[in-house]
Amino acid sequence: LEQRVVERTRELEMSSQRQAAIFEHAAEGIITSDKMGLIETFNPTAEVLFGYKADEVIGQNLNILMAKGHAKKHDGYIDTYRKTGVGKILGVRERELMARRKDGTLFPFELNVAEFILGGEQKFIGTMRDIAIRRKAEEDAQVASEHQALLQAVAQGSNEARTVEVAMEA
View 1 (cartoon, one colour):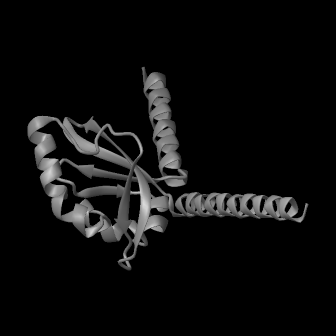
View 2: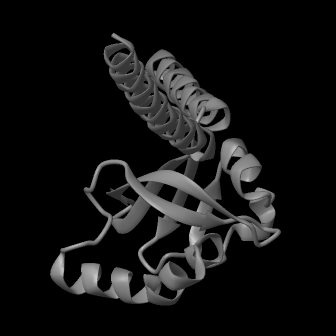
């Protein structure tokens, strides 16, 4: 029996270490909160994204990380979800929103939110990534496409003008 307890303890320690490693080294920001929207965990990637250290935000309302429009409505969103089970973001894959860094600057990010139960209590987990670079690349590609279309129109007009010119010379 003692050997089984030792083995089970070792398994639990390994599982705990594995979960901690995933949380600490994930490429995405990971934030968990309680049912009221108070931050409980804040991984290192979230620290980089938002500019806060974990100990600055743990216990704070999630709305400190949101653009002002969403921040004002967030508590209402949580209250509605708790009453109806219907959420604005929960279960919506890869919702794009604006977030607010510690210095007040806004940035576009992609957010996934899920609900889970831990110790009989409702919790939420959000995973997020900064999409500013992707958005800039998409905008640059759109501008390049528009420039290409304009150049093609100019070239076509030039060719048509040259055709008319050649016809008039004949």
